[in-house]
Amino acid sequence: MTIHTIVDFNQGNGSPESYRPAPEKILKGDPQQQVRNHYASPCNQFNAGVWEGDIGQWTVSYSEHEYCEILQGVSVLRDGDGNAKTVRAGDRFVIPAGFVGTWEVLEHCRKVYVIFEQA
Image (tube, rainbow, N blue to C red):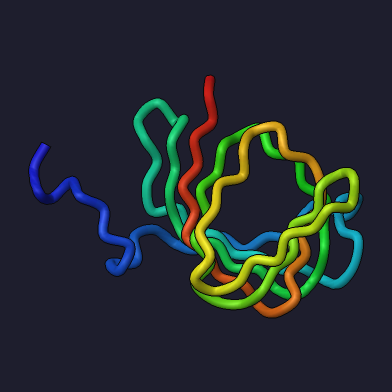
């Protein structure tokens, strides 16, 4: 490996992919989303990039462990019991595999993500 294998998010590697959650997962709004995966490990268990989401709410079920750093906006994560955590620009946290609940974007949100999904 050389210095050229280091992935610099500022270089804008890869094209952004736009999508919406599956219709049955959307609870409110029209949460258009965009992801730019800057790095995928050769084993495809580790990924890192930037995600953006528009206002809306949808159900989530994590099979992966995800580190998040909110760069812009405000979101609310809720678990299956209705407990809520508001996250905003500057917040850093991990969502463990097995988390089930909802993600709600209150203000257009942008985050850095690092994902590990065990094979």
